Length: 325
Image (cartoon, rainbow, N blue to C red; front, side):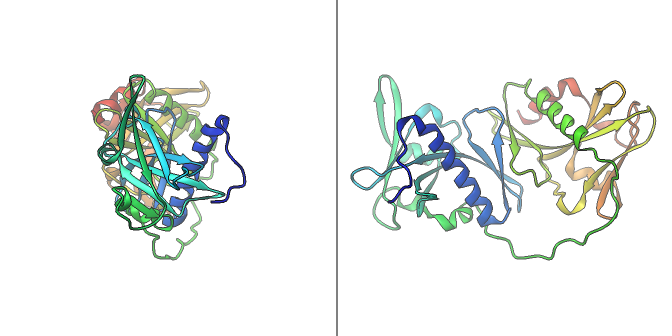
């Protein structure tokens, strides 16, 4: 193996970040966006979550990288037993080979890693170690879990999709730039979810799909994804519209649309929000060219056909926590 730089001890954390982002980039490249990466806003033991868009599955992942081989020509991946927090999560072990991932990558569930790894106790702490060579075949117990780098996305069930024609450009849709209000709404939802200590929160990088904020319950290990919409108003009882782009909208049972009301003069959010299952949106919205349109009456207690979806914004974290528990 050749390397442009020999990593010293003080750069270990940076090397781990390099491994993570190279794994994410490789998965996105191979799947052509079929795997979407969510990164944690609060670290509770998972480095990232892959959203497989084909079926909506969420796959928690930990990445462990090394920058050199042992004298015997092996990669050693050592973790503390307490760092394995989810038996169904995937552990990806790789060597940073110059500017690339190694030719073969270890992909194994945490439960399998526990069973196959060597166990050692040092000063009262239990450590688990995998030792493997970077080639196919062999009689090592790790051999069945070594994946060629170029087949990494396939290991997570996402081959590159067949080419499709781009959707036609359609004029119309919202004329007001709501980017600033939208960012405030997303930040407010994250703030409210952060009140629930049992929720790990993730954001997609890049933000290209329906889910914009992902919550994972640390005990039940269930996921709930939110797309956040902010409906601003200057005058109460004036009808407002919320737009969802049809070409990128993928309704799933685990995905909800959260609509916040933003009082522009008062610079504050309404006390209540809407929490709508995405699978019910098409029955509630009307179609306008490329858009699904929800019509609202911000600043009032009335919403057309949406009253049953009202939720207390202050208790949004507890609400989501209950849904996932």
